[in-house]
Image 1 (cartoon, rainbow, N blue to C red):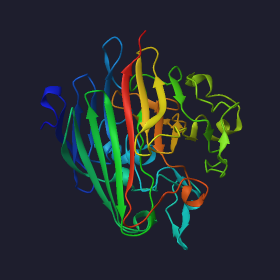
Image 2 (image 1 turned 90 degrees about the horizontal axis):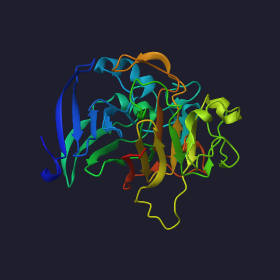
Image 3 (image 1 turned 30 degrees about the horizontal axis):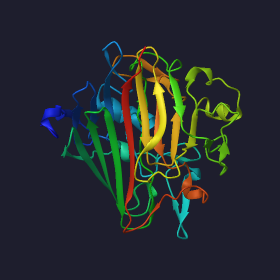
Length: 369
């Protein structure tokens, strides 16, 4: 099947990808544009399982971590979340509980003593409905999942649609939308791990990162925000200018010790005159060796930059290489961790009649030698 402007050569195709343990068929969808970018995603978890991008020498590499089979995703991805859509609430909720409108809700604990990425059997393990859409100068699809009331303890039936779009100007756009029939909390993101040198190529220490944030949310020893919003100046978390990732990973700063590397929420700087509905520049990552560049733009207030600190060699990628600490990084544009328990943080409550809508864009480019 093809979608969008045929002159631009963008396309969407699909093929069977197997059947889940409970008998649900899974489909792999392939988005291609006219400039060498290919994005493959699964109806299982909305997982972005392959992202092909050329380097300055013309060689194409898969720049996201993942697995070779559906069975591997089912077995291992509930812990690693490679490429998956995360919800209802991305990141951590302290002690697996929160209070909303006077009622306390209890969630399953999967990151003792906290709930991480909504607990087990969350959005990243569901088979989503996928419908192709027509896109000018691109190709796209809408993924839909209806989360029933009290799924993993969250109140309200939540209807979620996520639109994946790949354009011929090398932008992959993710539109998140959600509505509810009861007051609830929502925080949606994508949890892709990137390695701009290519999946299976080793660690990302020689790659660079820049994040447009002058503040961050410090955490306790269990990665739960203290409630403070602190400045990055004078700390290794000051990434406002481009740095080589490996130069900071072993810094003895206490926050880095707690996280065993980078695993923090940056409070994104936004231009005062900017529209809340227009994605703003948030981060830029590069691989100097290949020239591959990834820029992230988003409407979300925060960005979790994570350097794969918990990867421990028990997961093997499609090229047959085991993933170890530091073999990929995540850029999770989202609301702040534990916001339901932090009244000073941006609001994550969604009520009937309201629309949750956030946008994140990945812009791909090649840096000259």
